[in-house]
Image (cartoon, rainbow, N blue to C red; front, side):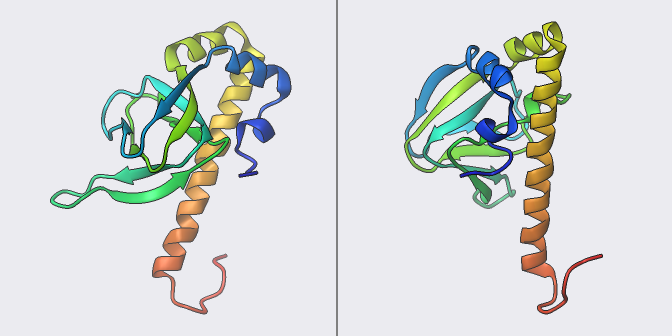
Length: 152
């Protein structure tokens, strides 16, 4: 994926390298739950290979998939905003390889290196904005009358 929110595109080289020094390689098998809605968000991932599905709990039903993420994408942004709890759940759809980051270590590096902190904040903000826009488009596809045109 070549989205403007992928790490390679969104982060200047020096900040990307600093971030990747804090990473550890992990892998997940299909069906593995990476996090659950409402639990503490103390880490995040950048997906290297595979697909992860974000889902939401629906009482009395199975979790409902709301988005899928792949190569180069940030998985998890709740670690960056109080109250530091996951807003969704996540499950590996296929074998996944990823870089995993300890949120506290990254936030400490952000505080110690303000330019790095601004780059991380801008990247996470871009990811959140992009996901909100993609959700808006999906909702319009589902609920807007056909042929209604674009919204002002």
